[in-house]
Length: 341
Image 1 (cartoon, rainbow, N blue to C red):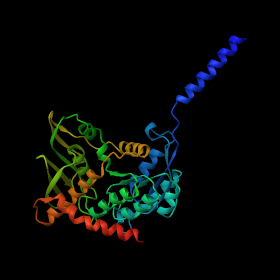
Image 2: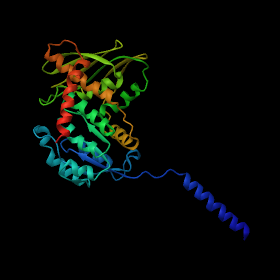
Image 3: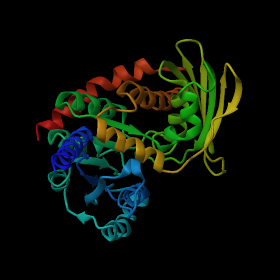
Image 4: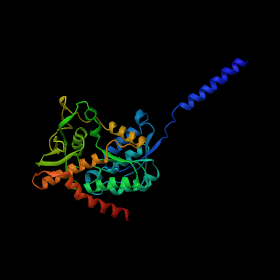
């Protein structure tokens, strides 16, 4: 009898100790979405709201969205009715404002295809203290890009932005040292233009993001060659390296490039779908650690702004420092204007 009781007691105590040693189950997080004028909205929601999501995405579900998007870009505005119906079919509640979204969620995906309203939209998210991913382009100007990161610092809210091309297997392997020290890279992607945005912001961002993923920060100047169906932006890095981006219109290139490293030349690889990006977004929501630094994102958008300025000046080199310095006071005034509303 005594032996039986002792065994039961030992089993109970051991079970309690084992149970207490287990990590607490992560609380499910409600994801809010702003903007339903891009296919990314539906693609991301389908990954997160799947009946059996990937383990890396489990516990995060899109529960609320507002269809705010572009007011005047037809290719965006025409999508909103269709995507609104599709998001409802995924069990998402549709509301009519950013304020309504942030009240009903824990973290935010800012998906508006048009970069121009991003600063105003994300300010409401920052003021509510909700971590946020901002889809490409992060903004419609370099000034707004700077303002977004200044506001994030002010409100102490983590934020990052990225093209899905950054997290392709090839680019990440190179970034993590598979080719040793990188001497240079040539990347390419489609580069359709949108008159409301700097030329490379709208779609060239994919190839430019790939370039910076493998080259890293430190670009000092850009020289651009522009033709009707092609743009070539040549970046000169502070350590003497050279990286180029080729943007195409009217002919098919896909996404990719070549990197030159200690182990020779190697293709960077192409597009691996949206899931690698969404996995990084959820990891960011879980940890609060941004996978792309503000400094790198600012360099990317300064590179594209400097490429525009080079075109305006007939193809001369333009320093990133110059365009950042020019945009800085505009960023200050934009924030002051929006926060005084």
